[in-house]
Length: 317
Image (cartoon, rainbow, N blue to C red; front, side):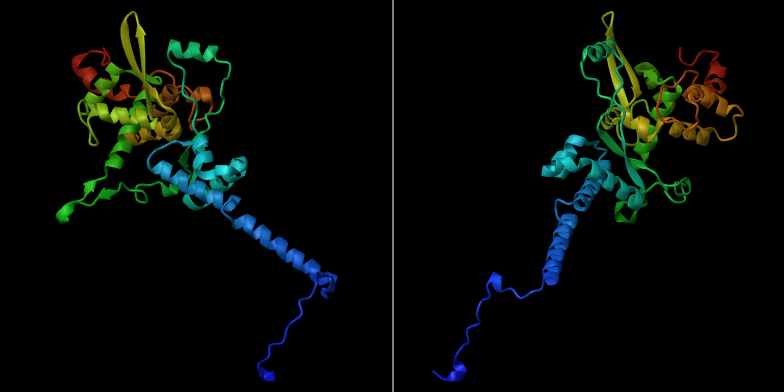
């Protein structure tokens, strides 16, 4: 075999023969540590990646008006990293606020209204203070909430016809009106009184989104209102109250702004009526969201000036 075709064997150095200096070995160890930290910061189980997954999950839940439950977060987002819930939740909330102008806010617990519910709550050993259920809340500044910026969307019609109003916008207007009626009427309305209000809006049987019954059922399913049934003296009584999502998404502040928009400057004592109707004086601030509402509905302004004057009757009789 020619000498030029021979392959020279390269001796394998033993660990004991490592000629690298202690400084080089320390630098190698530092580099390895930096790689490990990078994998920890950007890996599938890192806080950064888990928080991004939670942001995606929260946005998808809000699109379908599905409450964001802690149990679902643990199962669908965190997996085996459930102990990192607080860090992941905080990082996701920061990302939502900085990028999307939203934040996750916790829903209040459902009210115990009927006697049966109150007895069950009194006999229960555990009283959960937190619901561990969240929804997304809009935190954009007021200047970005005007109609010129956030006008109602339109659904393109086929065959180049006129655009149709978005049914989602109609639904928002409808549940905002119903929640306003509830809060301005003391926080609760009987089924009969709500039916009379719906008739005055020409929505006794149908609405732009569905029949009246289906629309109210959807509101109850989404948590905007709660239908309360109770039997007294063999008779079934049905009342409606504001649900957890209705308190957070609309609340007293939203109802007050809604009434100001409807009545404008035509009513001199509107603010006083709003204060009494929504119980704002008791809460100490005009922008309060939670809490119980007082009596004296503001909507009596319209009823007394119209139907009651013509018939000389109490509109609720």
